[in-house]
Image 1: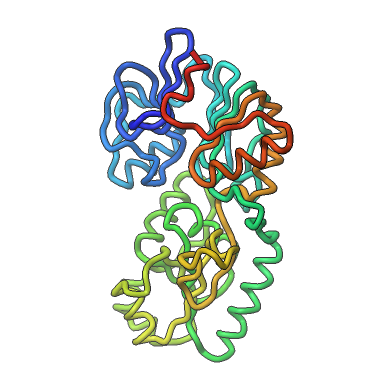
Image 2 (image 1 turned 120 degrees about the vertical axis):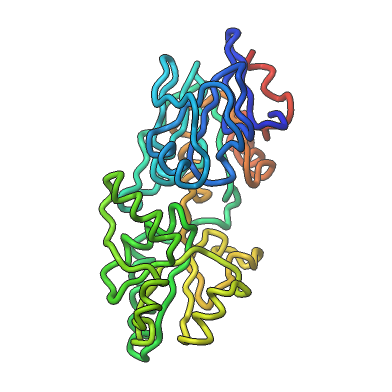
Length: 320
């Protein structure tokens, strides 16, 4: 682990895993196009999926020297968002952000066998066990139905990239359906990339045509603060009720996961049990934990008899 992300040096080769700044001295692997994983500048070869490249371009980062395939480096579909990949190389598997739970168009490949595993553990505590997707669909559909019967418009909120598309796929049968303009832009790109999402009008156009005055309606929007001007207007002018989707809603200890009128525990990451199962499936002799509850999850794995430790600066020396 370095200040520029994870660096692996094997057989005189360097591979930078989700670096903050790409480096000319090796291969730079970008696992997906969430902003916290995109580099801030170009330099050197970038290994990433075609979808990640396209989405990154939409988000303002145009990859130079981009490749989708390099010999001896296998991209593994990790089910997090469209185009997200893990990386298998030299008996090392880097999961990136991963979700082994199928969610519509998002699926995960079989976990590859490896000797060393570098895994995220965003939800690496036992309290984070998420409900099944069918349970979520039933709960939310019943809630929307109740609000609709009272003429109340509903805003479904999740990350603009990833969760918003899952929400669209799960609840796009409601009508009329509108989208925050940023979500519509991302949904349109998904459709161009072969993901069939129902099309709908952006809220700006709907508002200009007076359609939002005809209640009820449903809208898919990014997760945002209740102090956001858009959200304040939707609530004050139209009486909209918000339903937020976040894995953090599973625990009462993290109030930022429940910033909406109703909160649903749904995530684009593995829950605790799925993380444990993924580690077991990998058969790894050594596990390094990154991003999340690194100490707690590594400790749990050690109690299971699995060699595990948080990945800290210079802790990959044994890779060399």
